[in-house]
Image (cartoon, rainbow, N blue to C red):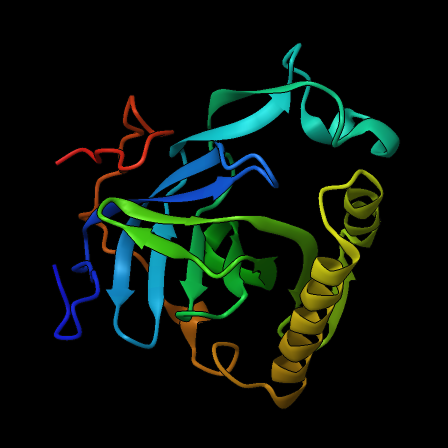
Length: 221
């Protein structure tokens, strides 16, 4: 559906694609079908259900990326594979123009575990979903309001591998500091009660379309 300002908005229950393009390549290498929970001018919330078929990057021989030594993790040849999301589902929250999204994770039995601040390029919408570019650096946030930086080693290696310029890295770190300020103030979305949210039991798991890597791709009706 289209908002009054001409922007694209989706109705609760619609299926869209949440995608990431490779740093510097522009090619989609992560694709996750999700269900829209809420889409307003202030916030997009989507649900990635357990067992969702997704696309992720792997090394050319099929080895998981995280198993490659850090020094060559971003220079070794890669491809993509289709795989199922294991574990509990993930609720993703994104505010327009903000250079991060916030993900909520639960343990089995809906015991809330943590928030995860994924630093990324502000998302670009298209008819079937949205695209971004991951910025390597992340932050974990816990119910007791404690927090810690994640993947600082990968953030540093991405710079050494030429995937981020010093200027871009400085912008990403500054964005992370702004996110930390939000955490310390316990602002949105941490104080908004999303950890008590539950998906509609009638929702079906979205399908991964054959043309997941094209723009625009076509989601299943």
